[in-house]
Amino acid sequence: MQFVLIEPNIAENYAILRLNRPRELNALNLQLMQELRAGLQLLDADDNIRCIIITGNERAFAAGADIKQMQERTAIDMLKIDQFSTWDAIRKTKKPIIAAVSGFALGGGCELAMLCDMVIASETAMFGQPEIKLGVMPGAGGTQRLTRAVGKALAMEMVLTGRFIDANKAYQFGLINKIVPVEYYLQEAITLAKEIAQLSPLAIRLAKESVNKAFDATLNEGLEFERKNFYMLFASQDQKEGMAAFVEKRTAHFEGK
Ligand code: HXC
Image (cartoon, rainbow, N blue to C red):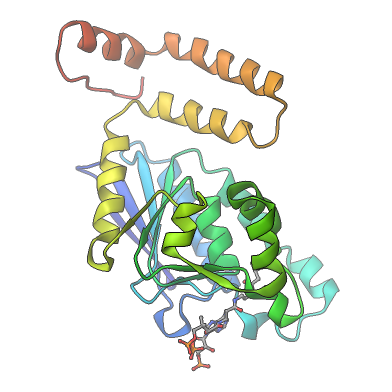
């Protein structure tokens, strides 16, 4: 892999995927996105890994899709390349993904952060959907996920003007989970990943699916889905272990069985 580095921590059951095109502010070219998909698939299939962090560097999480790569494309090129099948595959990752964001998260970079399950941001993080300034519009979920996250007023303002918002505003509007000083944003994401990695991976997987269901189901369908997942977990050893540990006043050890 050239543009995505995999940094697994087997002992602590998490892994970091680091976007690695620093000179281009981690602009998301097709190769980078394919590597990201491959990395996520690898980690999703690895029982030693229970939580995944996607990060960039201090200056940029990702400044969007690679404009230079897209510049001369026709609509038919875009149709044939079908880059969003990569995004669809990423969306299907079963394990929880935390975005650790510092600096620019713009266009596809903001959309990638929103595709993650939680976002830890540094004080310098800037979020935006500036595609409108390029004569296009968001294409990887920006009009949908941003609107659901921050509401219509701010989403319209960001999408129609290309204005950025800083970490404080992103936090205020529920786009991100936490803001920390720049030297700690990755460490904070690791702390969160380690906490999740100690829980039952089966319960985590079904809980993630159930929360996501809230975005594309009616309340009734969502409640039915939640209930079936809840029942299903009673077939796991992790449920027996978790409840026994509570009763016996000890720490539970979940094996994902
Ligand atoms: C290609 C990019 C890039 C991008 C930055 N670079 N963003 N290259 N695609 N999205 C390159 C610059 O060309 C430059 O390389 C180098 O990274 C450093 O960037 P500078 O502009 O010199 O840095 P700075 O002045 O600090 O400005 C930072 C910035 C600006 C505000 C983030 O780079 C910027 O506006 N970038 C584009 C942001 C954007 O419009 N994103 C949306 C893309 S469309 P050189 O070699 O020239 O010095 C999109 C659609 C998503 O994301 C669809 C789904 C995938």
